[in-house]
Length: 260
Image (cartoon, rainbow, N blue to C red; front, side, top):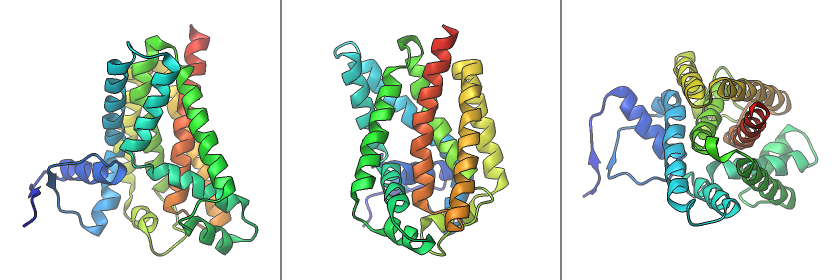
């Protein structure tokens, strides 16, 4: 007998649970019904999952910051983020780096990304991505740190919704195709309203600057991959999500320091 309990939740609460189970490895004592089309609909709750991740990071920072040096604390926070998400998008970053380094056309790019082994270029891209994220977080002024810890996971996951909506999928199979087919303008509108409200609440004008940067970068990334591959895959979405996290941290730290 399955020890998990199944609850009949209201639609958007159910979509939130589906999104949480997909984007994180946070264990839950229950399960929810999930149809194929629910995966795309759940993207409306991706930014809310970002808030959940941000709250966990801010809570961890509150616990360990009094006891450890700032660089060590921030390194542990980046480690915790990778653990919470199960390295889901880090894998996409590494695979895309390997695909970009591979010689050949579209099919070769897709084959390399599908390979479960990480190549040399993918490993370098992964290390550089983590280092940039760590150093960007270290650069955030301490008085704005908890706000930034809440914001950057939200905007990166909003970027995923923006990237998926109205896009083409490069493969007929795989989760990337399922999300591209199921994500619609209603999900994007809800995610955008939520992301904009959170951005302004946490960092006011600085938050809107970060949100605008994510929108521009995400649209540019989608255009690039659709031209190069004819569409998107889960790896390409994960790659842009990782880059968005880095960029939001960079933008937040630089704009805040300029204002200060």
